[in-house]
Length: 383
Image 1 (tube, rainbow, N blue to C red):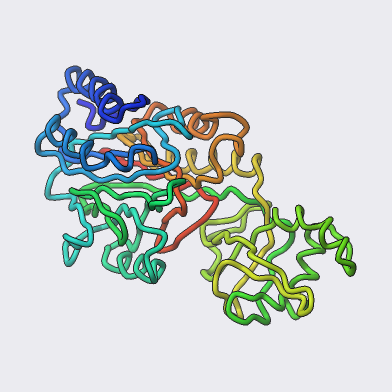
Image 2 (cartoon, rainbow, N blue to C red; image 1 turned 180 degrees about the vertical axis):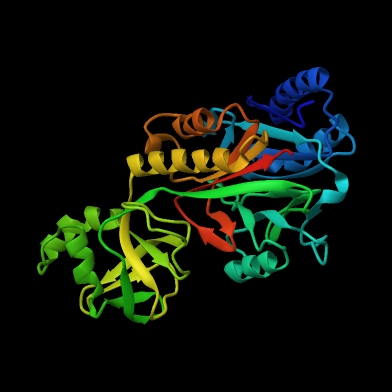
């Protein structure tokens, strides 16, 4: 018996898209004997207004299944990506009902003994990072994986957790009887060496290793000292491509050349202050933090994605990988990997034919942190 089944479909009508995907699931169930207890329902952003109707239909089709999921600007299913088109992606699993618990603001995880948890969260939630840390602290492993629903509509994306929600956190906690392996893949490459934050005010970075931050950014971008307004305007496209890789945690193992480990959080540069030689970062800073200026890099992202798939296969050993969830940054999909569905195909080729769904997020969650420009791949392993 195969304990996971996956399906996906695109159609202008949400109910028809779900019906097409359901037919695929039912065909797999007929051949495998799957009796699902937990399901993931991911919806394209265009279908978010129909989320409650689609959840109701999923409940009618598969009674007794608990549901989690969200809406997003792009979906991932097996080796396909759906960007800018209406679609649904399903993953159904037969897991012991005493080994998972769906939670939301209406039904918190509480004291339920979770080993780890999958989380969907609203980007506009106040103190989101603190809430993620608090939730991770309630799990035995201190590990979360997931992401933020993404949307191009004025309304924010929705979350699914035995109901349809907007705002807050929701997801599913897993007990010690379910083994999940998870890895983070970074999509950026350092421009220069890592330096220590020596001077800052809030999110304004003023000094690194005792030198002016803006001067070092220009140095790492191989730009000359800029003095005239026309020179700044000419350099602006290069400056806008730069990001900051921020590390607060100790290095995990030996540093990889030309790549970040998962202790690094990539953040936008949101402005410059030429008068003070400062750089504004999209994150509060503290003296003693470590920071590298970086850029998105296709080849580095490809190599790192293959690396985490290989690590997961090695960690699983002889045990079967039964199903997988992949959450990638909305800024990574499609063109960043060279062609439509290229990222999903890399995972499929490197990981093997494991039932897999996921989505392109407005921020990715791993450990107790909120990431950007990353991919978080989590695999359910059998005994």
